[in-house]
Length: 173
Image (cartoon, rainbow, N blue to C red; front, side, top):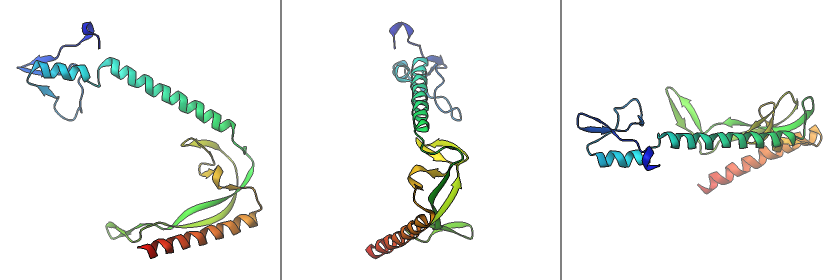
């Protein structure tokens, strides 16, 4: 901060306060007994106008970069609206926690997953966490290009592998 722009602390009843009204509004304002301590805070205060402007500029640049990356990802989408895709859906059969009366109880160490083959026509294309997502829940890694019978066989195989993995984890405990 420039010396000619440095703000002075607000003095009331022998105490010094930050002129930027920083801190949580639910609690009393932070105060200092010495002017030196208040000035030290003011020089490092996160609510100073120049620091707030810098943070907003950084956030704006991040949002623009994210939007540009999303546009690039959408332009590289393999499927379009109206295409039929075959995919494997993963879902939870038995969760780690179950409700017992008024509380949640841990009943196992890992979630137990099921896998099923599905066909669906693409209605929407979007971006979730930087990845192309069809219909709000189908990701590119889940889509298969083989016949539906092969996709069903693969889903059965994934379920068997998952059960073997759960058994191995249980044996290691």
